[in-house]
Image (cartoon, rainbow, N blue to C red; front, side, top):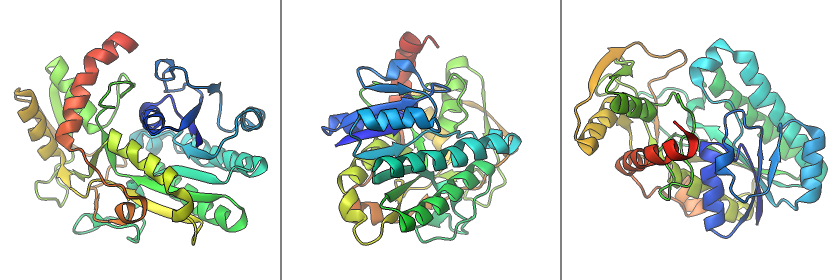
Length: 329
């Protein structure tokens, strides 16, 4: 199978590309390098530009016989989406519509969408399945929700079939260290832990008054390699999964809820170094969090998470000197 990955020079997209290649699939990358890195491309065919550039898309689909598209390209910073909502709606929603039109125009019928568990409504037990109520709590989350609505409508009116993978909280690095977190100042919790540890700074737990077991936010931390493997499983089971309904959604998580304080404690145990920590207010757009209790991905795709948050922390630490050598920071 030949797979186009939008945002394939980014953290998740590059890891998905490696997983696809490891499974014997051919990969083509489309990226504008707004956040992605050329160092992650390797020998893969690259089309540099915007996902809403019609002429580029038509050239790409004309030159490459694409069997499926994995759409990872998106703006993803929740607090930034609160301060810059229009940029998020334009980039994540409007440009996806243009991409979908190009798929239809060029006869590409398989589409995997990088969605998000942030679209779920709060749950008093913090657990969700694919059928749980939806209530996105930030402009970023609403962009994912809107695209899901568009995709479902689109499958009813076209030959395109869609699998939306609702990511929980990816952390860690490709265990082979081919690529990893590329942002110099990423915003997710493990990156903040690493930053505090490396620089001997104070780690801030953002939000300690949530109705969780210890007051900090609860997350379903999934190793990015497991997440990448889920894309391969979805591609390889795509036709059978969408045979009766052309629009499918899958929760991609571990099924294990871990609080931010618990992750910090695990980090201390792995490194052997005590963390200096302080408690702060939630970031704009933050929510208490949820974790999945669904088995749909296992039942339909034959996929389940195999790695733990401990594995993710160790791989993320191993990536630090490699990133310094390859990216310069």
